[in-house]
Image (cartoon, rainbow, N blue to C red; front, side):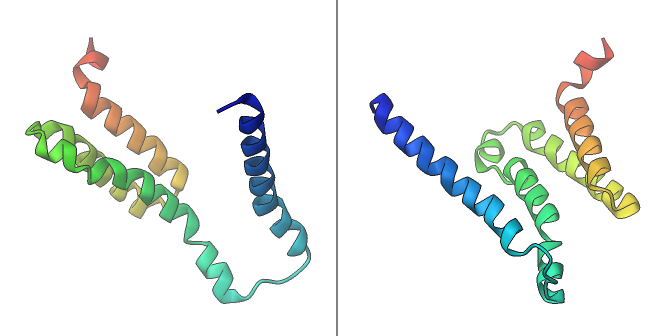
Length: 113
C-alpha cells in the first residue's frame, strides 16, 4: 500500500470516528433522552468490561494447551473481581483488583522475590 493510499484510508477512518463520536453530542445537546435509552446506555461500561475479561476467560487455546494454571488464573481473578464488584459497585475498584489479582496469580513468585 502506498503512502497516499494509506493517508486516504487513515483520513476516511479519522473522519468517520470523529463523526460517530462528535455528531451525536451536538445533535443531542439540550435534549432529554427517553428513560429506556438512558437505561440501555448504562449497560455500556459493564458490557465493555465483560468483553475485555471474556477474552481471557474463554480462550479455547489455553484450555486445550493442558496447562491448567493458564486458564485457572484468569478465572480466579474474575471471581475476585466479581466479589469486589458486588460489594463496591465500582468499576474502578473492579479494574484495579482484576489487574492486581491476575498479575499476582500469573507472576506471583516473581513479586515475592
